[in-house]
Amino acid sequence: MAAIGIAIRIGALFVMYMISNPKILSLKNPEDAETLKMTVFDKKSYNTNKIAVAPAESNEKLAAGAI
Amino acid sequence: MDFILKVVQAIFFGVICIILYYEKGNTFEEIFQNNQGVLFFFVMNTGFSYVFANVNIFNFERPVFIRERLSNTYTTSAYYAGRTAAVLPVEIFTCFLFLVIGYFPCNLDNSAGVFFKSLLALELCAFMSSSFGLFLSTVFSDAGVVMALVPVLIIPFLLVGGFFVPLETVPKVYYPFEYLSMFRYGFEGMVYAQYENNPLVFNGQATNLIGTRYNFEVHIFLLRLLSQLY
Image (cartoon, rainbow over all chains, first blue to last red; front, top):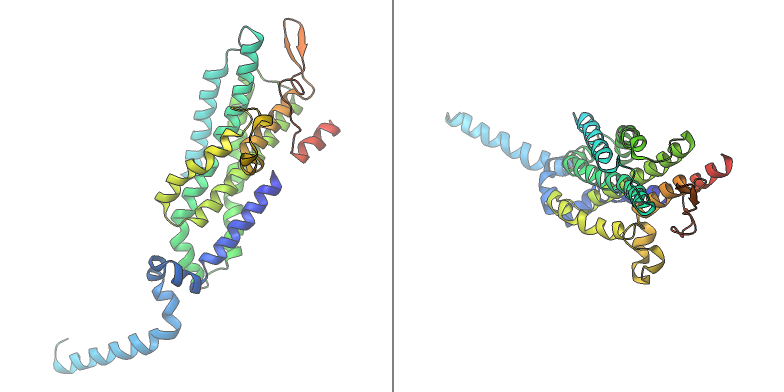
């Protein structure tokens, strides 16, 4: 009984590993991937897309007196 | 708060158990049915409670767990170990509380050895049920889907628990459920602990139920070991 319980728990741990794997998650579960977009894509795309674009826009607006 | 709710739940079901099974019964069949009923009620209530409790807990934690895991706050194994360490003592305690409240007034064997063997069987049933609940909650991400599926997945295990149908007559198609049923192993353990050395006595006549009414070998190794030691 304890052995079956432990085996099931090992199965649960394995599934936890699977669901916390970003590649599997973003392919199979779009809803969760959307939730995690910030953390998943932070390291690669945040600097190039968000930081590089956003300050430029705000500088232009600042210069035009919009802000 | 969660701990208090579980304690209240254990007390509530313990009291229900006392109300239902306090009367011993007047005939041999009544006594037998009462004892069998109370033992299966212990197992059934424990099984259902712990499956549902674990299904709910992880589904609420899931988005936070995934987010924190992907930001490398902790590893999956650390989360799993921490969660188990937090939940397991509560489960052990509430299971113990439930049995302490419900066991003694219900005309079962009051000796310490039998009680602790029954407790062992019930704790193992709780452990297996919580494992099953945890597994289901990790497999299905939607709480609503899990809540709808759990009864469907649990009832087959319940039916081959040894109470509703004799295990010898279960068709082969059903064997996987039989061998994975926490209710079956729990009930076997409880019955074995109760009647292994104690025949049911009525009107001065002792009837040994193991081997006559219950034709099964107990599968809990620890219980067999304890029975040989004590």
